[in-house]
Length: 445
Ligand SMILES: Cc1cc2nc3c(=O)[nH]c(=O)nc-3n(C[C@H](O)[C@H](O)[C@H](O)COP(=O)(O)OP(=O)(O)OC[C@H]3O[C@@H](n4cnc5c(N)ncnc54)[C@H](O)[C@@H]3O)c2cc1C
Image (cartoon, rainbow, N blue to C red; front, side, top):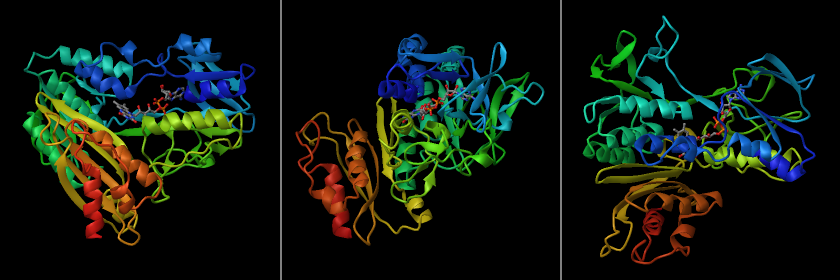
């Protein structure tokens, strides 16, 4: 919808834009769903950025309940299915923006019905969010047992939501919690979650469920142990919605996602944006699948502009910048990262030196002061920054943006250490902690 609006903004009302949407919902913040489930957001409506009416008022022919089933590149048509049956639509320019779906493993599905077992659900759509509100409300207050399969950011956010709703929470993850961070920083997050009463089991995947009458009763880990559960959250990542395309005919990667050029073009008259796409990593130059709303919004705008004004905008790649939080009772952790982790640098054949620095989010004499841990990575060969990971209290997380901006422009640790960042006692220390970290890493290098 971002591409649709931007195309009309760029071309004016003479452009005929049709949008096909399989479900009944468009343009909502999936990112807000865990906070809606936690009780921070009052209703699903609050998460809707633009209603169907608003899209139509802007001149978009929005067709809900319309599932694209294939494209014919020669005829320049899209086939789709709606309540009336199979339809064919011609196009001059086609934007593929079908996003991604939550991974639902075989063990979550009842082979007799082909449906997920009762009490087992992912967290992807507004329908999922509403289902989670009902499922959690159906548990005895304080007595429910929620198992979360997956320790990525959605697993962490749902652990927060279920715990804040008063339930017993176990996170089971085959790797570590927030495995996009290095183990030393993951360990800090796991410690905070333990302190807030969440049981965290790492290095063990869920391999099957204990089920009675089609309803989940527990989850088995690979070591054979049974973890009792009234509900199981599927937070196992997403897979791109590209099955309806002939991927042999379109640039795509092993993830099954498309590989558009930096201007968003994929093939003659075809463009692609968002979670159905891989992106180029700005530091390694390699294709990577990092489905995030930050990239999807930019790519949608770029495609909407370029299909009217070719070559006007370029997507500059991704750094893997991301942020989340885990906040339950007195535990409050902001978690952020950008650039490469040690593992990612090694996989890319880039030598890095790293250093962990502990400090404070504000001057020690202020009530705002919270602990903060900053890990910085840089290449010893040219002193260029390669990554940052941050875990800390209020105000810690968004500090990652200073490092992300530096990384974006190819800065060295010295550039970051000596740049002009802000300070007043409620917000920072006179030597801002990110700059202390950069200075120390510069010394080490
Ligand atoms: C719980 C959760 C929390 C998140 N938190 C964050 C966050 O904090 N920060 C962040 O940057 N990102 C976050 N994300 C990711 C972000 O929501 C996505 O990156 C973003 O929604 C991708 O936008 P998109 O338009 O590419 O795909 P989508 O939002 O998935 O939209 C694709 C649309 O296409 C429709 N569709 C699929 N197939 C077809 C078809 N064949 N025909 C017609 N329509 C079809 C789908 O129904 C869907 O409406 C979060 C995601 C989730 C699920």
